[in-house]
Length: 121
Image (cartoon, rainbow, N blue to C red; front, top):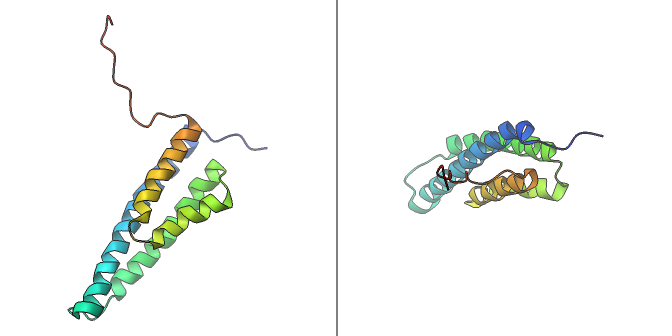
């Protein structure tokens, strides 16, 4: 049986997931803006560059989410929620926040550093 995940074994995967959640969320919002400009204001003709970029970045996001989820030994349902959040505007930002909390809760790592106590207190 495999050992339980440790902070050291998950730290890199979490950082990669968090970065890609931000990147994918940003490109998805940019894609939404481009779609509005294309179909509503008709100020641009093509959305293919942003669409292709988001598609490739989304695939990387899914792989990094699965990597993190497998390292944490999460359920299939949680993995699906993590990866699907890259398809809904703003949801990847929220998912990144929740996933970070889940990791910290399960590994027992503090979410913020505790303030230092003055000497002699």
